[in-house]
Length: 128
Image (cartoon, rainbow, N blue to C red; front, side, top):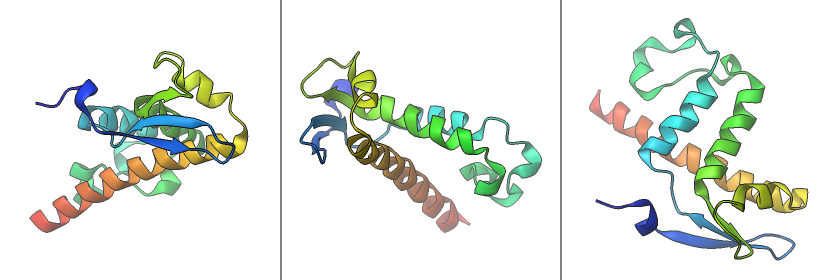
């Protein structure tokens, strides 16, 4: 079994030269927590009943603020360090970067959320 410390990592260099160490992927449990933040306030009626197993929902049913909160939650899970700092301060350090640098990290978090969700959707679609 792979533990948090054994998970593959990589380094991202932001436009202003900050070095940020991140995990290469969200774990299943982390993604689930991100999905809970994203889906807050979405009702069962908003869910596509045929795809409930994949938590599919029309994005127009998701409050816009939830998207920002989910991106931040994913970023918290992905960040290891900013400029060699501690894990405990990584999120705060990232939030204090210039917007161009933070945008790169938010994009990374969003891509990780999307990749896992796309893989889950493909698995569900192929099982049907």
